[in-house]
Length: 321
Picture (tube, rainbow, N blue to C red):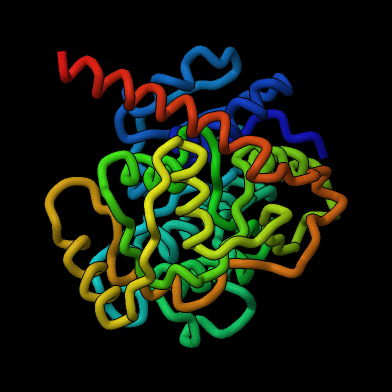
């Protein structure tokens, strides 16, 4: 079946924006719900994208949104939440209850195609064995989708996603611009970053591909790195390399706790620290039906990190005038 009208939840976010752009490039109609229209202004130039204000916590609004669409893609996720067992109320609401409500709305509205976003590291182990609320909630959300009858679902588990607007490599590059040394918890944890355009391409290519129905796919780049290696590369490529010191777990947890309660944008939390207890990698090759050959980090990240560094240097020069 050809899916021509796509409802994209989380379409104003980093990955979702790239998915919206690739869908629009194929001349597909895309509806992006958002709490506030200004959050998605960057999508308005895309000719086939419609931004609508809607409350995804309102079941009546969900029923209205799924009306007359052919497929639903769910990209909504959070990185931080209040603590609780097994995953706290915030992760529970966004990663578990919302996927179930979206899946139920699809079934009730006669929409069979549903693509859901999980996370690399979830694996197929029981959710109680996973180290963090984030991962446990992602595993529970997967189960909500899998057990919904009447859906042609696909679940993606992306690794760390990099790209020009990412909040990962850019963050470490930015910190090294200001800090003399990088003291990092669990710097030996292995990660397998994937370019945002490759992630978006996998979602868009899977949309009309029946071989992806009822399948779970890991999305990761061609190379695994330790967290410490990635921090060093971010510093090197941005022109301000700093020494990286690995903290013992006891101090690392304390650091994560303090950063979790510090004012301003949250850089780290205890739950992020817990997620780093396991490697975020896969041995699975990219499935051929996704039509994606993952780009290497070294061919893309140095370019946008050097541009960001130039911007910071100019800002500092102006401040000294």
